[in-house]
Length: 117
Length: 113
Image 1 (tube, each protein chain N blue to C red):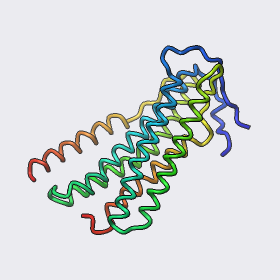
Image 2: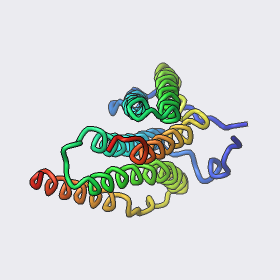
Image 3: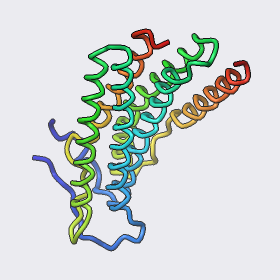
């Protein structure tokens, strides 16, 4: 893998910022893995939940969100790294409110399913 | 030739080097959990490719443990290597993407539902 050009952009930042960005990336990756595990577990173990198609949609939805997050975590790490090097503000992203919305929606659907079952 | 950024250790009271290395180990555990789930789904549904995805994820988990160890060494002592190992971040992102694809596919196979 060639060294990306942006590594020569701007100035080398305070090392703590670089490490914090690396940890943030890993935290997003773990978030994706946790959502994925939740979806797979829901589908494999919550066999009593009805109606079944809703559970399938939830499981697939969580898996898809996990896939999106895994790509996003890298692009966001890269964007942050470039912004830090150039001394610019960090890029805004809809991913945080988006993730909150996904969690809220999933919880709401699960509560309804649990009450109905 | 990759330029690696390294600094003299400052005795960071925020323990950032240690937290960064630990972060890798936690990520390895999360990968291992998904590897187990994928293998279980594959064995229950009788789908060898899902078991293979699980094996790949176990391998990635092992690699993440190794990166954590490397990071722990790089980020301790008198001189701290700040630049993450080449390809490490892309690699773990790709592993997560593979896990997601496997997880979504596992919903549609076998008589699990």
